[in-house]
Amino acid sequence: MSLTLVIGTKTYSSWSMRPWFALVEAGIPFEEVLIPLYQSSTPQDIRKVSPTGKVPLLKDNGILHWESLSILEHIAEQNPGAKLWPDGPAARAHARSAATEMHGGFIELRKHLPMNFRRIPRPRPTMPDAVKADVARIVQLWGEAREGFGASGPWLYGRFSIADAMYAPVVHRLHAYAVPVPPVAQAYMSAVMASATWKRWEKEAAAEPQNYIHPAYDAD
Image (cartoon, rainbow, N blue to C red; front, side, top):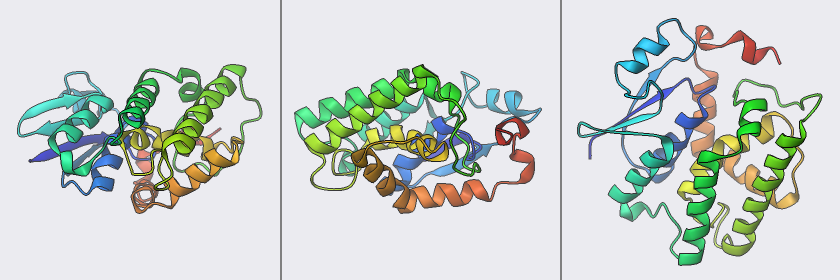
């Protein structure tokens, strides 16, 4: 399989992080093409390769796949040996539902706590109730996964899965904005941030050129 993953700036692009994280964690080879966000040429540069004008985008032998969850499903389908979904039907159903809920939900958390890998972790002065509700639901999902299906390892369902890739940017958001979470959720976050895949993304985000940085994001 010849894969090319087109992503945005690693400091900010949460949707790009998801398929990238899965490919790297699963050891699946791919070519990375990064298009810097928030540049004057960004819309045109992305439109040249993406039918939606957004990233990420996966090219597999000339066939285009867009939307993070669709890309992840394709990766899982083409790489059954990577076992990117849990084995058991109950765990798999929970993981698929949790991943889909992330894909379409938690709008307030995404709006008020944007991903920024250069942010020194600190809380926001105020946290809207809608964000608190999103956090509570995420913590509930993580607790169900860890307590119900996660005994075999540190990831949500024990073994790394697409659900972990979908929630990796949320781990960063909760960490970067110093959002208090229960011990089960904090232990999961610590495990994700200790992974080699996380550390690689973090290092590469920190190494991005200064002109990639959006002043408004760093001002909060």
